[in-house]
Image (cartoon, rainbow, N blue to C red; front, side, top):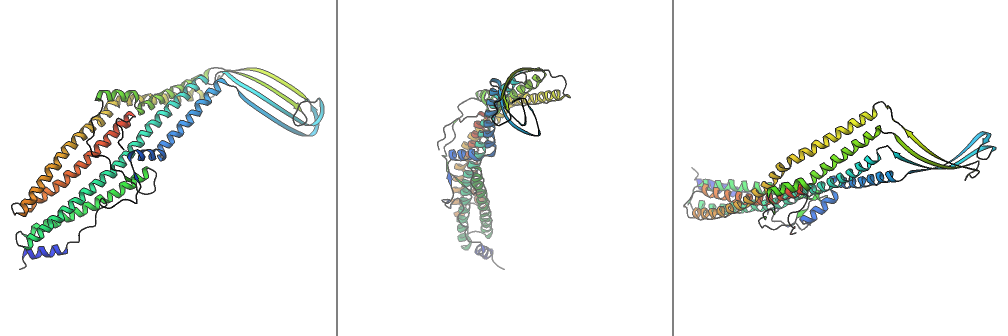
Length: 437
């Protein structure tokens, strides 16, 4: 019968050679390295939502200029015509018989009352305010997505190092077990347990390396690169406490939160649009002046005429088109009001989620640091005891896995706190702390 230690020695001989260094241990000199501030700036230039928001701001600006110009200035029209008839006729410009007729006119027309001009100015102003608020909200949403991609790279990089350290510890303990099995100081199952742990650690390294590749590609896409990008390391200091209380944060959110400002501006725009549609029931008073010259040749000058007209138009019935437009504008106003009311009601709830999330993440960092210290000491003690034959391999493996888990929890807690802070800043529309990078 084959001795157990011979079986263990054979399995150890079949064990694959040590894995190549993980991506965390490899240099990334070929990858573009960006800081958090650079990543936010680059992402702001290529984010489709933010580009669309800037275009809306530019369009709303011209819309407001157009409404103001229409309120204060008349519309001007210039025309030039040349007509040739098959038979000569009486040309009233020259007073003679001629086959040609030419004219040049200049007309000025101003709507003194009606057409919703005042409401259009208010609506255009509200649209510009809404576009600006939406641009601010979009910029912070873009920064939030960029922060998440940036911190994901750093987190995966550190988790990859944690996985590599787990593999290194497993290989070290496997070497100890190899010696003890060959010396007959322990049973073969000890080494088999360590073989399983080495394989699990190798698989964890592969998973973390794959996740790191994906996170770098995601960051590259977010900042406008066709390939991956690497994130510059940030400090590992615990995040500071928030410079405000929860009630102050909720009050600021309701006062100047980008989402709420955009919703209020959209409500004003919808109300102004409703007012403009209602003005369609008022009569239109139009002032117009025309001057023209008539002749049988280009640059007519034979006869000149000028006229001034006041036109009053009273709308009576247009097939219920005005009523339909008013109904649609009223529905848009009601929807905008409901959205704004809902955001007002949700302000405390939304801030509570991110505010308490940040405080919980800060506390999680402290607990995770204690966990790493305890797990490190426990692993050291269990390793020493196993070498002396005073404990079992299961206790050693439990301490080894607990150390890797506590290190991973510390990494996740650190970047969860940073991301929670980004959520708070996105809701408030301002930075709470100076970026050290």
